[in-house]
Amino acid sequence: MKVLVTGATGFIGKYVVEELLRRNYEVIASSKTVEEGSACEWLEQTEFIACDINKIREDYFNFFKKPDLLIHLAWENLPNYKDLFHIEKNLFSNYRFIKNMVEHGLKDVTVTGTCLEYGMQNGALSESMESKPDNSYSIAKDTLRKFLEQLQKSFEFVLKWSRLFYMYGKGQSPHSILSQLQQALDNGDAEFNMSGGEQVRDYLPVEKVAEYIVKIATQRQVTGIINCCSGAGITIKGLVEDYLRQKGKHIRLNLGYYSYPDYEPMAFWGDVTKLNKILQGSF
Image 1 (cartoon, rainbow, N blue to C red):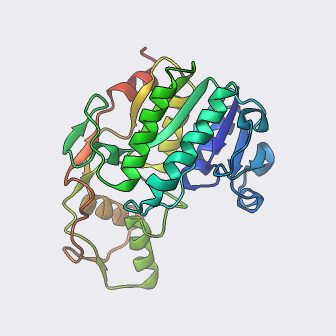
Image 2 (cartoon, helix red, strand yellow):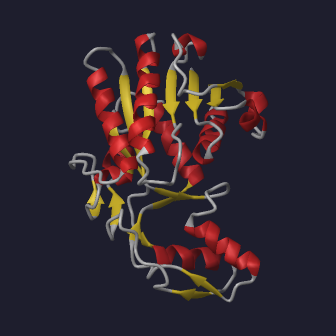
């Protein structure tokens, strides 16, 4: 099977490509520039095609050498969740790209969404719940999904919408909490400023996220929205404390220094019933 991965040089993309190669898939990796690809260890094991999907092409499907499957990770301007750029540019450029691929023959599409599509709903979030996005990023992602569902009425293709929750690992954004914590440790800081830490989130190591994305993408029995997460919640304070224990480090936590984010509910995690069907092969 020939798999095209867009956004292949991003935080998640690098791990997805590695997971596909480990499973002996033929991989076409794509990112905006050749320079981005040249920094990846797996470059020689893939066919790398630099491409800016914002630019309109007549036939992307043939340009990418007729892949059997698309894993679409590309998305610009993160983590600026409130930026109108997501609605005004990302939404339409990503839809045009995927539509062009489908129009010219692509039959199998996996796109990564976000848990923020659930909006300010607390507790265990299942795919059957109504989406209630309330920032530009989540609105754009949720609308892209709805656009693609409409596209299925005109073209026959399989759509798997992999809703990502939270992750951590090597290469993550320097703005993520664990990156900031490690920087404070490296600096020898006496304390680490953070929120009250009582908010509950669903976290996975990025390697596991990549494994789940590949398993979701390479099957066709479970389709539509699929939560990609652990199915369990952990407080941010607990996440930080676990990290310190694993590293054998200590730093005073200055809890309550930052206010809680206004774009997320206080406590939520994903229901993994659909995901488990894929992982267990119980279709």
